[in-house]
Image (cartoon, rainbow, N blue to C red; front, side, top):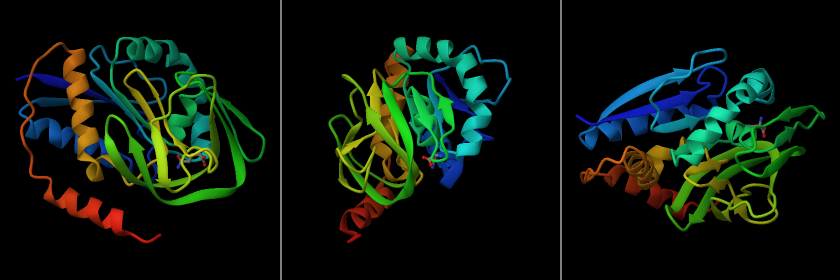
Length: 238
Ligand code: GLN
């Protein structure tokens, strides 16, 4: 059976608002598609796994981001190489910010990032909280929930993940949401994101298969519950 190696980085520190649900969804859908998921956890100071086909990272408090800063800078080059090799990645909120150049917290502390996204994040006085809808070219509409103090500005030619049609996205001003470099995706969307957006989960699996140079036809999965949930998100009036 074809194996898909899923790496979840910093599950201890970076796992707010149930972002672990992304791992559960990706693992389950990998099985449903007739593939074998192999889950690796990476925490501060751990040895890096040999096989990685897709990487996930979640949100976290400012203090947790400061706790992982030294370590993420240590493994930054390794992550850059995976991105250059087109390994798919989904980084949410706090980890997204640290995949950018830096996050300056509301109280003025600078936490350095690894620069996979050319983006700077500055903490603001008011948190940006609420339901969010994002139009993307490759993954359709994404529905999620955001809760962050950081305002992210994409620099130079950094591509966003998409454009917000509801909610604040990167900064509440320019309608951009998230960032994309090759197959690495950064986003503010929690929810968790993947259960409500199974098309994104399957895209990550397809990209992981492409990275492995393995051709497998994905199965048709009954996503009627997700479809209902997406319909509800679409109809929500706030
Ligand atoms: N601590 C960061 C912020 O407030 C990230 C928050 C999160 O991951 N939900 O912007």
